Amino acid sequence: MRRWIIGLIAVVGALLALALAMPVEVRHSAPFGFRQTLDRTRGIAVDGIAIESNYPNFNRVDLDLRAYTEEEQYDLTVTIRPVQEGAEPIRTVHINRPFDAIRVEKGALANPFTTVRFEPIADSEGKAYYVWVELGPRNDDAVVALWSVKSYSRVRGAEVLAALAEGLPGGANLPARLALGGAMLVFVVAAGVLIVILGREAWINGWSSRRAAARAGDLEPL
Image 1 (cartoon, one colour):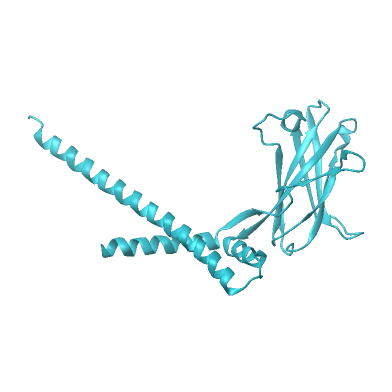
Image 2 (cartoon, helix red, strand yellow):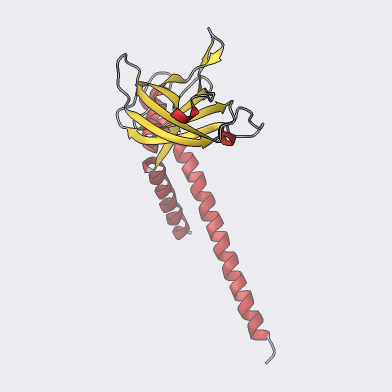
């Protein structure tokens, strides 16, 4: 029994450390989970939108691109710059997509977003950036609209937990941090218990099967 408890504590500790230290891609907050590019005054989707980064290491955008012209390939340039007037682009990514990958008609269960990753912007927390898409020279006569944008940062679990505490009513007070920490601990403990139980059952069943096979072998006639 004591070994079982020690094993459980070790597994829970390892899972908690991994959850806090492992980098994950976290989506920035937005009204719908994404930012729409619709220009309501003109009733059209424009080719860019401003996004706000909740975390450092802004490294990814998901673009809902809709192609209206049946070209074989689309050469696209994705550019990111601070929203300040006169700011220079800080990330530029060239991508190539076939018409079928970004066609305007999407199935009911189809994922409409194209993922674009780039070198993380380390000091992006709390800053706004303008993201826009341009067509390449061979697509001058083609039509592509950017309907919406999701943005992400690659951060450690501990940073996500701290940001969640900051966003709770009352700010980053001790009770808020303890509540979030406790919820995370409960989740990790539950996962650890499940892993230990499943591992123990698998080991016991495997051992029983091996013993049964060995006994059956002993009873076989010569």
